[in-house]
Length: 183
Image 1 (tube, one colour):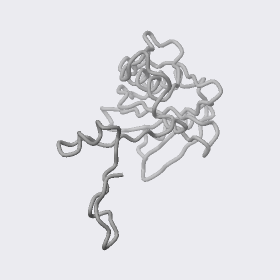
Image 2 (cartoon, one colour):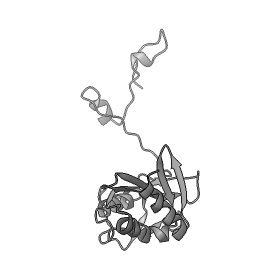
Image 3 (cartoon, helix red, strand yellow):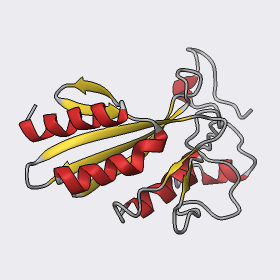
């Protein structure tokens, strides 16, 4: 690990009680959700992590508690260093502070996370849906949302789909000796 990254990691672990994980050379710090803004500000101002490369969420439905993790990827351009931050967010009250004041491009990422996962960002200047219609109910990337499958429409089957999703047995699906028939 490069010296500057090591110093940043050790400082944050000492000051905020972060937990460090290293996987294939990528360093991730697990933080309390209350610490995300001061940690991001410290990394930007004291350790030159000028760029928020990505911000997303993970849903560990029925696999881990707390259920959600908000994940941040920071980049120090001058040193070409990357650091990942993870902040667990409980299902019962899924919110975390917004980092838009520290990294303005977080605006779009946080709106997308709100829209698709339902994690709220306190202090966000305009937290509203960005990908789905305002009248959409729920958050489709949550793993407890049932998957709805709709048959793909091609030029050869659109009439069948429009006639009530009628399934026609295809010859390649039939056992030997059975003929094709509509169901």
